[in-house]
Amino acid sequence: MAAGRRDWPGVELTPRLEQAIERHAQTSALAAVDPAEVYLALACLEDSAAAMRLFERRYLASAEPALATYRLGPDELLEVRQRVRIRLFVQQRDGVPVVLHYAGQGRLGGLVRVVLVREAVRLRSAATQAALTIEAIEPRDPELALADDERQAISKQAFERAAARLSGRERCLLRLHYVRSVSGAAIAAMYGVHRATAVRWLESARLHLLQHLSSELRTLAPHLSPAQREQLETWFDTHLELSLSRVLATSSS
Image (cartoon, rainbow, N blue to C red; front, side):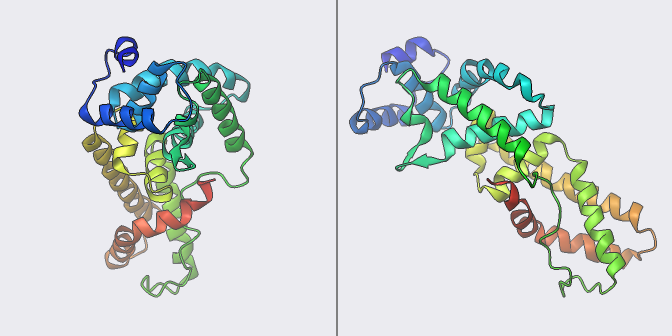
């Protein structure tokens, strides 16, 4: 605990973090070679925004030169970083977050580098990329009340074009929350922001998708009556969570 406070003075030792450190000390089978590393990892797991920023600066940023040969675009790099955070802080092994199997043993930097490269390879080689589409929506959903194939195709195209207009961060947020069931608190820790900020980002991304959808429907289907267009917009609004969770599941691997 003393080593962590010395090396990471910007990370507040809250009662929750202190309890987490005590629990880890009691349950860990290995003595920590680098206790400050454990302190930082546990602080990240306890949703410390300051700790997550320090973790990214110390480990993620320093490992990213290993991705140079992959020539990732900004959105791809953002996606890879999100995947690394999920692998380390959300996924578990033997009931313990993966990061705690390595933190304190002097191997955390190597782990981050390996996971970073692995996720970059997976992103590039995946047969199905993480796109927002409506392939999973039933083509003859009775609630749509649209028997016309042309209108079905227009709806699909409008949704895909609306999703393409989202920022990389907005797509990542929707993917994390709706496909991987990552909570607002966990997303906040990943980005190093307050939970209320992450929740606000999620709602903003959702609203932007619906706004873009409305705009694309007006562009692609000017012949639709206001009532028909409103029917489509209302359907997507009320079914958005289900639609995204079905569609984006292809990117969860």
